[in-house]
Image (cartoon, rainbow, N blue to C red; front, side, top):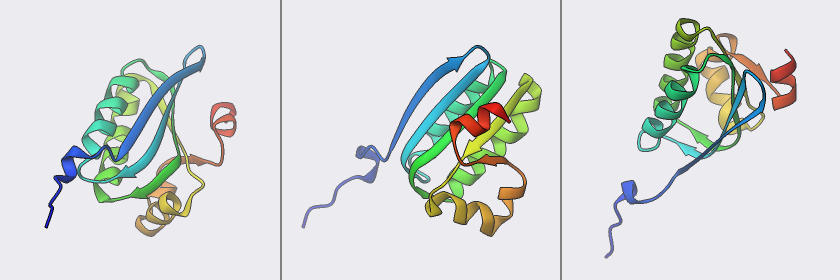
Length: 120
């Protein structure tokens, strides 16, 4: 029997871009769970420090666990301290369902595309 350390697997991919002045888009894909949530947290905290509009594009997320939700809540609390507007792009059920089930869909500014988030 072979047992693989789950921490050795990359379960999340993060890619930041700045499509316009004052706008940062963090594309997230893969599974956001207790193993990968710290990487997301680091990216969000560092990105929010720049202020402006910060869009978390979660269209590539295949799983959003409670650790990921906690990171998003923390980011929403930090955003005003950095004069940042946090916006979430979510279309997949893997993301929209946990947001709806926890009531967090009402807390975050959730959009169906990056363009919609940036122009809102």
